[in-house]
Image 1 (spheres, protein in one colour):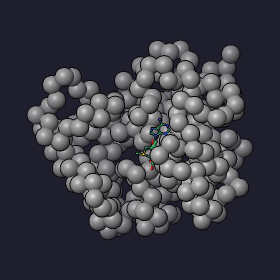
Image 2: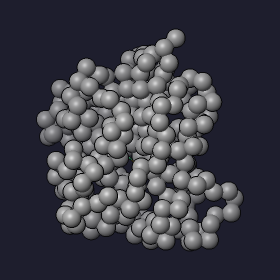
Image 3: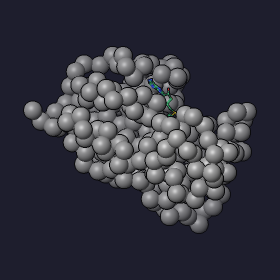
Image 4: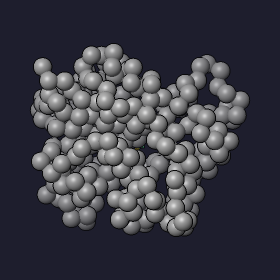
Length: 256
Ligand SMILES: C[S@@+](CC[C@H](N)C(=O)[O-])C[C@H]1O[C@@H](n2cnc3c(N)ncnc32)[C@H](O)[C@@H]1O
């Protein structure tokens, strides 16, 4: 589902995201439109003003600012590659400094108390560390019993084996190995017994929105980011949604 406003990020499915300036999104993007992905997750995930939320791998904190503005939640905007001071500036400019707290941390050494968070989200980041079989057990320690964990990640909707499909092969990068299907993630989490998976699916037309975002944002990119976006676009087009898309998954930490 796209929109008639073809030269802007306006998207009929994502009314909350439409309220944010396109230039703000272009200048803070680190991948496919993080606001659309967050809004797709919050279609399923209840975020309320009384909640403490960990945004893990928040990048330039667009998603944290979104959660604070849209739902009034307190958000710990946590990231490795982006400095806390840089995110603090962006958070102040957005006027949500009383709700969003920038933290510089690595995902395996999080500086939080056990059971501190009502919810954890991770948008286009969890695939970098969360495919480790033992990572979920570490992360859920920071959730309260009954707390929610929601994640959106680029996906291989159909898992590939050692032989990469011919049409993808010219564009294949080994890091795509961390993209997995909704069913892969469901099993990866469910078999730990530490969390109960409420929902796992592919975002409808995710690959089409991914292409649309590249088309609109590519003129704002430079250097390797631009080259990478051009190659990614060609791959998405030739694949036509057979493999690439987005996994969306939501789970609950059981009460003891
Ligand atoms: C593709 S960017 C996405 C950022 C943001 N969520 C967004 O969608 O705009 C991936 C983010 O994951 C974070 N990340 C990757 N590995 C990490 C780790 N080991 N610990 C904490 N953050 C990590 C990076 O710092 C980076 O900002």
